[in-house]
Amino acid sequence: MERTTVNPWTWSVDLGYNQGEVASGHTRTLYCSGQTAMSADGEPQHAGDMAAQLALSIDNLEAVLGEAGMSLVDLVRLNVYTTDVDLLFQHYGVLAGRLGAAGVATSTTMLGVTRLAIPTLMVELEGTAVA
Image (cartoon, rainbow, N blue to C red; front, side, top):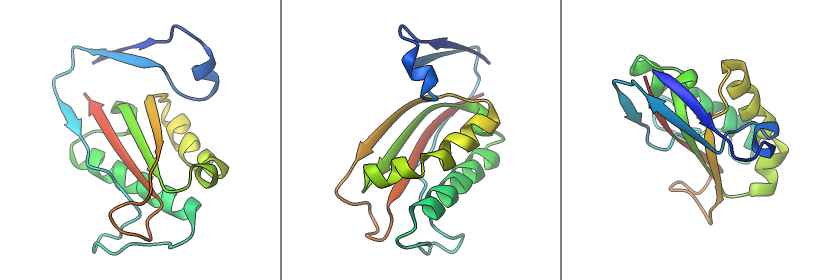
């Protein structure tokens, strides 16, 4: 797969994301359901701890990608849903660090929401990957 970034403005690159990405030559697309801080047994984890919830959500997103033979490198789109945007920004380095380590600056949207499906959850990551 070939990825071409689309950035009519460069300010987003400084913030760690691209305005858009063109994926060509790909053979598979994976649309990931929102991943949260759930254990392998389906139990919510880390109530009240945004950093820990964010880290586990990324772990779970990586697990879904891995099961499909992909990794964070293959992400072309990431939607971030949170019940507390200000608190999430305080811990955004957890997400940015993992994406940066993978060498990816995917197109991203962050949305503040009233609540997630399970009330103790504070963040949900929904991704699209191509390989």
